Length: 177
Picture 1 (tube, rainbow, N blue to C red):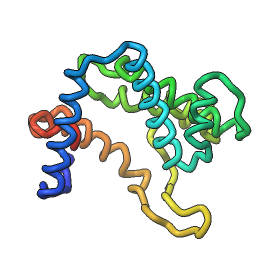
Picture 2: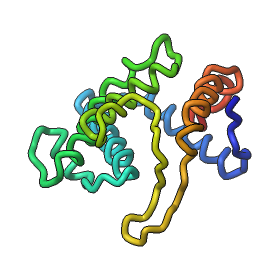
Picture 3: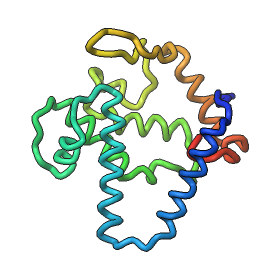
Picture 4: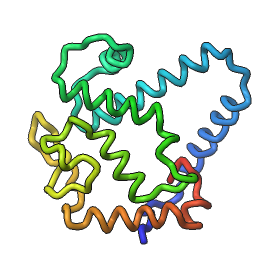
């Protein structure tokens, strides 16, 4: 089974307390409905931008916002499609959980919907990868991170999914999970 590899430090505990306090303040605050919609939309746009940019998507936060509003931006079809997929998934994220449980089907469905019309081979949408990949600096060519080899991905995901359903995960602060 998956084992989280971290140690609680004073810095982590302090950040968790800050996050919990901020969350409580937001949950208990009166929010003008118009502002709430605006804040949720901003969070959605920032999440889609951050998630796609770490994958190498060149769109700026402003371009992601324009695209989300149905406006045209100067970018490749793939860059735009990747962002649109993320936005669609994030907007309906609650629909992916079956009784609050993450399953292999959940993971593969998320992958399918995020990678729709983006991958070189559409047969890879919603499937574990079969090729070696790396995370690198496109300018220098420096390899920053080597993800596990393809033959390990399915087993590692099974371990993670099993752990997510465990008492250990349930008892951990959700920010860390």
